[in-house]
Image: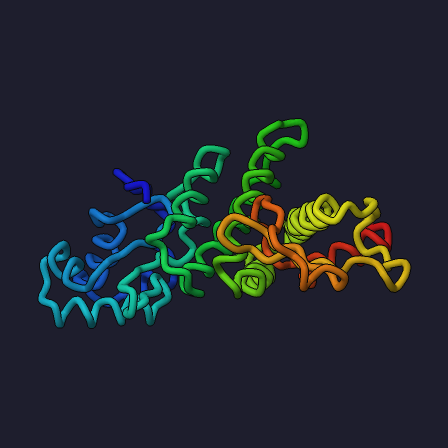
Amino acid sequence: MSKKRYVMINTSLLECRRFRRLETCCQRNAYFTSLLSSRANYIGIFHYPVWLLAQEADVSLDEAILLIERLQEVGLISYDSSDEFIRHVEWFYSSNINLNENTVKRAAKDFLDRRAPRTDFVGKAIAEFVVAALLDVEAYNPESEHGPVVAEQLRSFLVAATPLYPNLEAQLVEEIRLNGTAVQRCFEDLYLGIIEGECNAQRLVTGATAKPLGSPPKGANQHVTRLIPDSNQIHTKTKANEDSETSPPKTAPLPETVASKIAQSALARRKNGR
């Protein structure tokens, strides 16, 4: 994960209700210390053992435990004690990171890093990252080339991340509900693009004729295809040749998201001409 060498703290933090709930200078110092930690990175989530907070904040181990609990209570951080990871809440909505093409690419790489736990704890941060990036895309000038480039980076990232985080789609939906209603349509179209790409891959593997996504199958003897991400290859199985299959075709792995509620919402909107 890329190490962050400096942190920008918005001056509005002093008016933030969650920050003002910290009653002591020691509690506030612990929060600033976590932001400035030697482990800090560009995605606001990193391995941060209690002993390291104690060392960097110059407090005892018992005090560090209580400080983490307090920072969680007020909603400034989340802490996964099993993996010893800290997450700064709303990191991507702060001034800490400007989500342009390069920073989106770097953040995506960090989330896919093998050192990142494949847990809902990290999935929540990914959902925040995607929604915040889409909000930035929405702010671009319509004639700018940056918006489509960032959106394509996000699409590629979600293709890779979805199989790693089983509950990611539900977390994305919840994050959109909480903070991203302004970009819901953009988000649905982005996710639908992933589904369409998956369907196109299915057609290439089976040799089926391309047709619009959502069209009903014709004939009872058509191939039934299922994509299974597994070790950089996709296994294609049909009712006719499932037993005789010997060498499955190789292609880029894609998530199993054909039943995506997000895609269904986008398809319904498209059908209604909205």
